[in-house]
Amino acid sequence: MDNQFDKLVIISSPSGGGKGTLISKLLSDLDNVWLSVSATSRQPREGDVDGKTYYFMTRDEFQEAVRNNGFLEWAEYSGNFYGTPLKHIEEHLNNGNVVLLEIEVQGAANVMKKCPGCHSVFIEPPSLEVLEQRLRGRATDSEESILKRMEAAVVELEQAKNYEKVIVNDDLEVAFQELKEYIKKVAN
Ligand code: 5GP
Image (cartoon, rainbow, N blue to C red; front, side, top):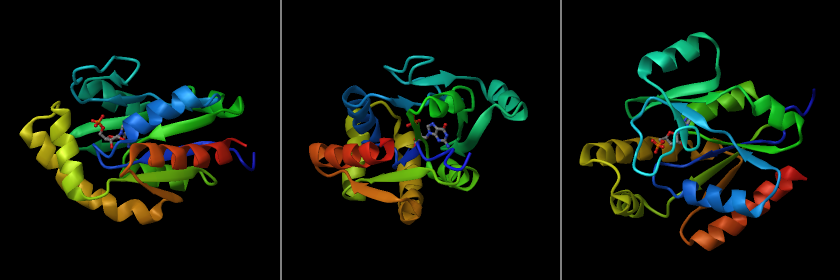
């Protein structure tokens, strides 16, 4: 199929960049948009639901799934594994749905290579200072984890140029409208 991946959309942002909120709003506003549930070896945070926010796995289980070619892509981020299960993605694309992958930049680069014609959005925080405030405000991460995520953010922001669309999440509503228009174009 020529346009096999033309409804596949990668969404990346540094952790705390606001993509979670934007994606939840998108899913409640638009039909025919499906968010892929990733697998991870990280510990569940408060509010995480196994099978909904992530499929939580041990490192061994994750590596076993890698060996069995169970992932479209996977990456190690901040000391934990994250991967996109292949199961269901094809099915949703074949049904004409927009499939969202909320993934970090290394995995995104792999998907861009593997899935020609796919789309990609990078959600940028207005500044690193604002990003740090948001990470601290959410109060779910340890100090060590916040510092690791800030270090990762500096590297991730350099990758924004490789994405089809960059949206600055300063005002949530403005960023949401921009994202929604972009996804509506992909859907049609
Ligand atoms: P968090 O631990 O904050 O939920 O996620 C950390 C980072 O991992 C985020 O940037 C998130 O987008 C990314 N991530 C989540 N799932 C996947 C995945 O399946 N593959 C990759 N490569 N990154 C993921």
